[in-house]
Image 1 (cartoon, helix red, strand yellow):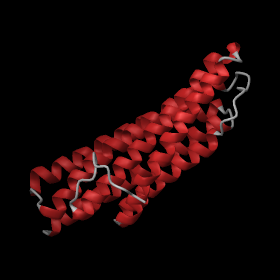
Image 2 (tube, helix red, strand yellow; image 1 turned 135 degrees about the vertical axis):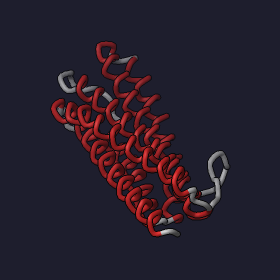
Image 3 (cartoon, rainbow, N blue to C red; image 1 turned 90 degrees about the vertical axis):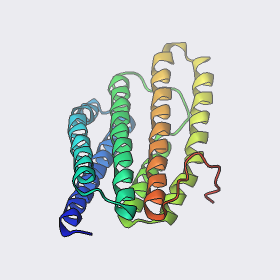
Amino acid sequence: MPAHMQNEIEKLKKRILSLCATVETNLWAAVRSIAERDSNRAQEVIQNDSKIDNMEIDVEEDCLKILALHQPVAVDLRFIVAVLKINNDLERIGDLAVNIAERAAYLADKPPVNMSFDFVDMAEKVQTMLKNSLDALVNLDTDLAHAVCGADDTIDALNRRVYLEVEKATKKNFDQIPSLLHLLSVSRHLERIADHATNIAEDVIYMVDGRITRHKTESYK
């Protein structure tokens, strides 16, 4: 690989990892704002979204620059393609964190909801998926990437459970229906973040092995 292209790719790696860290931090803050009914923290998450958007644009421009100037092939080309896709997933996770924060801002001054579901546990599982997908990217660890893909079914099941819990709660607590619907939205946003973490893991598998795993009914156990 020419030295100049190697330098550009190393710069790109630093940019995508910086974006990863920023998105992960914003998601953590969004989840805490729900758990702690903290509207101030929720507003910080919302305000930080523009930073994530700008970082996403910088990564995309770097990828396009490398493609245009250096015409990479084989492993290098797979890396650039994977980063472009991961970049988009990270930006979407940032948007979903904002959506969660907006729900948190609404719920902060409302009476606590009578529902037994533990959103913190679901959120922690989703955050672990995201962290592991990013660790798989950093370490090019396909075993960890496969584990992330396998964990997605658990989040899907939890999301379905929230739907049933909300349905049951709305029949008993008519005055809390708006808050319950906001919590249902939180669950759906967490489920979508888990999907994006899975996408990142699948892109890591592609980056390392050159193998496309999405749309396949593959066992990850």
